[in-house]
Amino acid sequence: MTGAQALDAWLVHLGQERRSSPRTLEAYGFSARRYLTFLERHLGGAPTVADLAALTAGDVRAWLASLRQGDKPLSPRSVSQALSAVRAFHRFLDRRLGAPNAALALVRGPKVKPGAPRPVTEDQARGLIAEPALDPDREDWEALRDEAVLTLLYGCGLRISEALSLTGADWPLAEALRITGKGGKTRLVPVLPRVREAIGGYLAATPWVSKGDEPLFRAKRGGPLSPRHVQATMQNLRSRLGLPDSATPHALRHSFATHLLGAGADLRAIQELLGHASLSTTQRYTGVDAAGLLSAYAKAHPRA
Image (tube, rainbow, N blue to C red; front, side):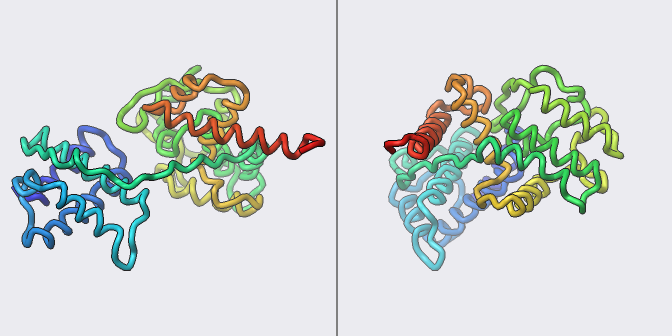
């Protein structure tokens, strides 16, 4: 079997068995194809699965070095992400095709300093949620839909893909939503009355009826609402409100966690609500909250 055929089989496995998102498939496929293209030049021919199993740590390091060279060198974070994708590919070669490669364990990626989440303030979150109703270019039901989606992102700490995965079968919303996040991990997220009211207002006004597996949030012509629409809406709203480019839909998820932490919520509870596999990922929010406290202290204390 060629490396390209193994790559195709891996992507099918990710999409059909692991239920990976289209964006994950695109990113992993791009990194793995770039890897195979480099190896074809490096080895003097298209690599087979046997060739991939026989690669040395030096071969993989040569590929990593190539990513940092050329007209468009990758950042350490991008190199680290590419290496993560290739490691996952080799795990598939090992477990499904019987072609292990121990050399991957000897390769270390570049050190990447984790970036701090950039949430919006509570007032900014309220402003973003209220702003769609003031847009004269949208029909009333569209404004209510955008308000409902943003309320869901902020009120439940969901990713865009998780919010848009809701179907007619999820309505009326229970006291807690069962959400399937990254890696197929399932978690329970409490639903605030305000979130339920916002979605109920949208459903009462929309011309589309969602039943069973049909998407709850609809685009103007009745198709499923796309993540790109939510991103474009947020871009428009932050422009009107004078907010920075960091005010993205995902920033509402960051704000959900940061504001809970600031109000005294337990870090472990926030980890469960966000669906983080590791507590270290959730701990990034403690730095954000501490920075906010120090900023407030510096502005308010007479001796600051």
